[in-house]
Length: 285
Image 1 (cartoon, rainbow, N blue to C red):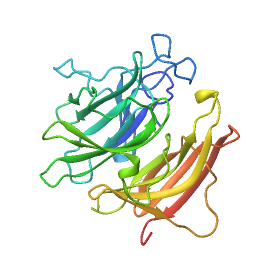
Image 2 (spheres, helix red, strand yellow):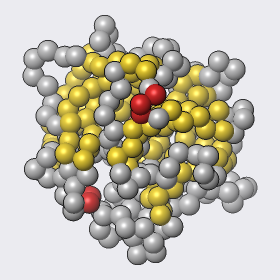
Image 3 (cartoon, helix red, strand yellow):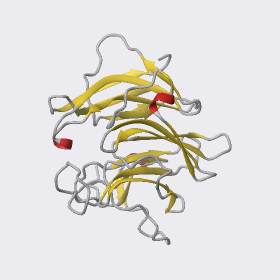
């Protein structure tokens, strides 16, 4: 495994496109608590790519030669996702914690042109600035991608879902009490993964429902429930499982392999770091 070209990171974002894993932002030092302002932490705005094709790995900085200087500000605990299979191949970044506070801007990086573009600079018509949200992408009916931001922490646990219309450059925000189906409770630092196939869904698991009084240095009230959100109809559905299941947790890693969601680690309610791995087949779930 090739060593990545930079310091160890905390609170970075990651998403895959083609044969590469893209890693953006994160905190290079200081406390994991976020207070905002100039002393809130040491965020980076660096984009790294790990090429994993051909059985070998190598790291690069894909935006270092971009002609445009436009790029996201340094941040941590942002939401990040990639375009759906067969889509544009772009990587998307929303929000996070920066030197000026919690952010609500939306960015896209195109690996083919090696350029960043700002899709929305934030403002009062965008979702509240936050960290610990989930961002997912599905194919839009008119072409391109339909981006959906889910939940997160803005100083309180949020339960809104926001859909970005790239053609109009506008967000449509759906409050928690206006959502369809069996909507989860407001939460942040939830695990998420796309659902298999071309249905345009996202699976979520766990997350923090009540924040710790110690901030990121303590464990809040976590949950252990799973849901699927249809990204086209915005209909929530609870996923019921039988037998042994993961314990309540937040800050977990989650991904899709074939038709199974793999869940790894996280933080439990006693503030212990977890190293367990779980698999759930979404076929028929």
